[in-house]
Image 1 (tube, rainbow, N blue to C red):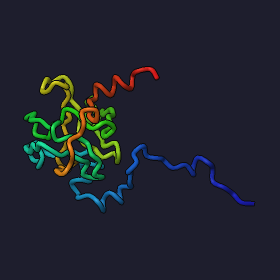
Image 2 (cartoon, rainbow, N blue to C red; image 1 turned 135 degrees about the horizontal axis):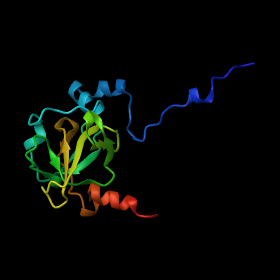
Image 3 (cartoon, helix red, strand yellow; image 1 turned 135 degrees about the vertical axis):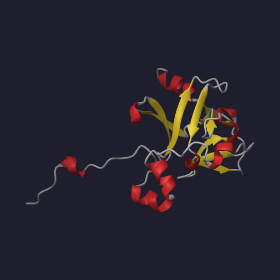
Image 4 (cartoon, rainbow, N blue to C red; image 1 turned 60 degrees about the vertical axis):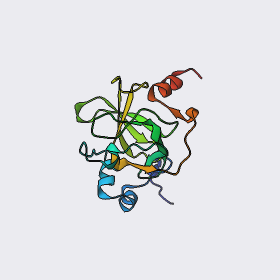
Length: 169
């Protein structure tokens, strides 16, 4: 007679992110600073990130962990906040989730491919026509210059995505 463990003890948690890895795997691939920010939801000091004052006219910004395209270069703007700011993103590239850490109610932005922490979403500040500011850590992104411009149908905003998801199916 063999004794099997209870069925519940054999369940493993499945990540909703296609490129998910264990912390041990990420530690091999990322610098200590990237690991702290992308995997442990850290934040770089304001004004210290490489991409804070870099404004390319072509290409896109990708996740520094998995290289998944996130933001067209044309979406980057000068917000004066100390971190790179974007006002729209490639459809399906980022995932928004509630963040109540530090006693605040915020919307966290993570890479939809690997779940890496990118930063936070702020709305209603009036910086751009979309009225959104994706405040992103420089360490979380990587600029890719040799890319074709994205067609307008490939980019969206948090507000448009919420409205689309709220529509009855």
